[in-house]
Image (cartoon, rainbow, N blue to C red; front, side, top):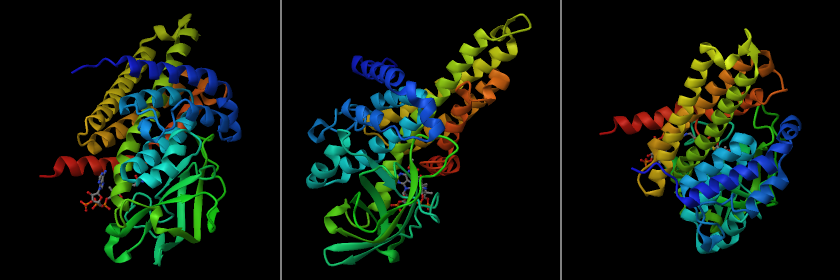
Length: 380
Ligand code: CAA
């Protein structure tokens, strides 16, 4: 067992940290306040290889491992979790899925520009009546010669209004249930795509979320990813990797909350001494640091298993379950340590709590992670 990072992994983490501090931090407060999408930042992240980190050089990516991806995601999300989720969806949901199941033609057309940051992708699975219950897709794709005609609504789509490529799931054969779901790669601007209004969210406000309507959208059969009927498996397997990304995002928020709490408790004086000298504060900081380390090891373990080509869906679910809880808990404690100052926008900790909450909801709620974990430990 080796807990050391390689030189390459350390360099990637340091580059991500520098980028986050120098390029992301200066505008994060304003972007959160005004719910502004970080176009320039995403462009630069793409140019530096962070938007398709695990994509092979054959398809325009740097070919890094999942551990490096976790390290970079933590650093970026520590400074701005909105940028973290934009990056995570493109990397672990869209690029991963196309690289694993795409034809060479699809990789040339879609993956290369997504991996090099020239284009941005979104992952469309949830619907108004199919969230946790993702097998019940209502969006239909009806075959018409060499084409499919798609109708339906997709909900809660991260990168929805900005994406150039939709990695979208629809029912191609209702009679087969989830075995009749297929994944389509659809380009922005395809007639019949109707973007909903940008959601006004509690947190990760600088990322963009909307619904996407499909009104007789006509796509060619060569836009199906993998085979017809493989869509639910593709969705589940991409989400396994996505959950490592969201666990890393949550880890970044948990770490940021800890660092803010440590800094403040050393500065703030009460009872004639810094509050860090009080055991009530010391115990909180100890609990926060333990949560961070536990979340980090679970997340790195899931990433390591993925890199070793071992099954990792249970580990990814555990990492997301635990890291998202750590993010919420640490953000709450950081606010408590800041007292009244934690409740206003003067300090960043109120944003950490707003940003943390979604990590318990998207890419499978806390309850869904428990379904995945318990099914695995109860199986024969
Ligand atoms: N990995 C691989 N396969 C999985 C899997 C996983 N984690 N979870 C389920 N499957 C497979 C099952 O093995 C089964 O396949 P077989 O029949 O071939 O064995 C198939 O999927 C159906 O599974 P179940 O029979 O268990 O179906 P279910 O309805 O009882 O449970 C579920 C399915 C686990 C609840 C699934 O619907 C689920 O994960 N729901 C959550 C969906 C989700 O995470 N949505 C996130 C939206 S995307 C998002 O948030 C992105 C963003 O923008 C940030």
